[in-house]
Image 1 (cartoon, rainbow, N blue to C red):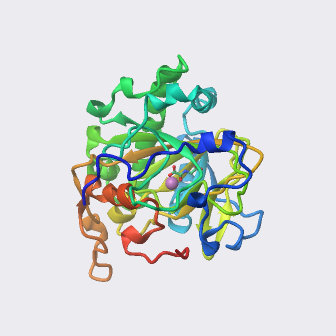
Image 2 (spheres, helix red, strand yellow; image 1 turned 90 degrees about the vertical axis):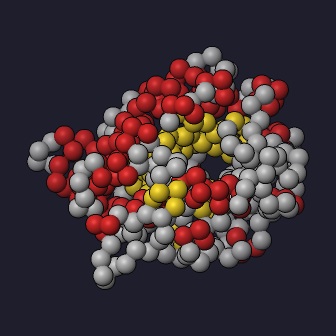
Length: 357
Ligand code: OGA
Ligand code: NI
């Protein structure tokens, strides 16, 4: 499977469509009836993913129960929110706002960073290269922070002026948090504290940022901002829009709309941790709905293994009763799937698509 050098069709910016004032969305964005937001049952409106105070890790009397909360959330949900995570709240707000400003720069400024399917770096409007695919109602920006040889500030927007500095600082803090979580997950899985970090390549871990921009949509019942998918990543740290909900997490046959806690990160298990943990932890499907009244900005930070290491189930977690469920594969090989086919539920891990095609 190879990525083509260019998109199969001319790229249309969803933001331009939205700004043009159209009252009906183009056919390309209309999902088949079974995949539309309203037609899949929503669960109890009060349901939410677990919220965990990581401050407890530093307190001898709370440490055990905090580890346990993370363990339960990883096993039962695959998704949780964390507060007191060590990333400065003001920096989180600044990071979201510099990206909002970027998306409101004139189109020529953004087009200078237009991306291609070979690396996906830069300003993009689709995931996947299948001609004629139904598209999602969003634009995005994708960039690399680690490994350091992939960090190229020229590929980060130069406007607004503060963006590079704010995002470099934000990246450093999120990556530090990623290291903390990898230790906790290792301990909770009964492995050596450094196990997952070493499996990810130690100092050579990967970290990349996908900033999602979901413009207002005149017919939100017919489309999705982001189709159901699990993240190919190791772990994801999502900074959601504080004002505008949109992220939905699969729970049984329905979807839970996440209600973001102030200055929390939404953390989720990615496919690489599902593979390494031999499915003790599962990456959970999620999607994004859009609305008529408000645009939405979110920052998804993906903490990944070094891209050319083989990732397979940890041998400590493979037993006669629980044989290895997945073959080993590099992250480079793994992510070609979503980069070619676009978001398609959990089909890559051999699990049938829950959401009808
Ligand atoms: C993603 C993602 C959710 C959101 O970028 O992979 O799932 O709320 N984003 O934007
Ligand atoms: Ni995702």
